[in-house]
Image 1 (cartoon, rainbow, N blue to C red):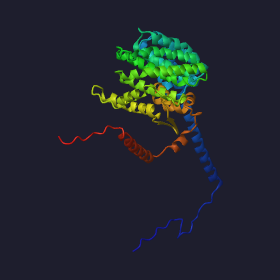
Image 2: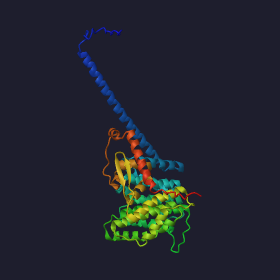
Image 3: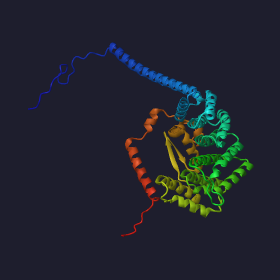
Image 4: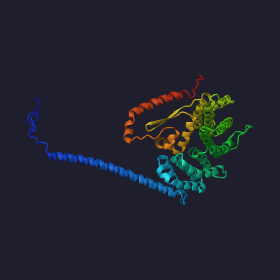
Length: 436
């Protein structure tokens, strides 16, 4: 038997009961509710803005405390202040705050470099680079570098100074020169300063190797990488005499750099290989028909390093060395470069040359994990890599453009498959020698 329908008190088989008409009082109540919800949203936005402003004030207060603490009597306090400033400059854009206090920070860096020891000097040298990166290429960074350059060179050329401080100054002097030096002749003078260091690691004419300890070898490696970094900006000069000097400089070192490929230190061998590839790229840009006299011997040497299987070397070192020298050999033989794509926010940057790679690696060494943020927001770094002015994208639009989890999973799976196929071509193939 079907269940009877329940009747509402105000309805009789679909007919409406006594319904009160919509009055002005109800309208006013509804209007008030809309106004109250709007005011709640407005107040929430104001509170969010006030919270953000307070957080910014607290952050700036911490930075001021760090700046004041760089002249503290305690070495531990000074070290903590330098590290705090380094972290802040590497992860945020602080141009307005820093430009007002740049000379105070510069004086603190100079004091720490002159009177500090070891780790403190290294932190001060790194902070100097980050300060120049924040200020960009202009009068402000030139003033900073004009004060710090003599200190860098004094420590770098002082054989009795702390070896770690000398290593840090070799790297920092190179990047600061790239950012803030305005005279190309001063750039060449700095390059000669680096040459006086890393040429001591050259194999002698009689075939004997210089006796150099690992710490000094690392100093020479840093000097070679900084020399190569400055080499990337020498080709932009339109003055014939300077261009000829740069050409002679490249040819002279191209004949000697292969001697560093025999060095016992893997980092020195890799730095020498990348510098050779960079030199070939720069010279071929000027003279596409360039013919290197010892080209076959150099290719054999590079191929031996790309397939090195010496048991006395660590597996990690061999793996890293093979990967780099495969690309170096390809650059020398064919003039090709294994391009790499860097993604940040909604943009992409393609590293398609050894010049770009050396520049990117130099900035990333100091900025670290904040490199993508600086590529997105730092006008100077964007100008170096020709990315144009920063793109202003709000968080809502960024979230809307973000791919879904499934799309990211499918993309990563496809990329993994393609990468595996590409690497299989270069992996050592085990030969079946048959049954024993």
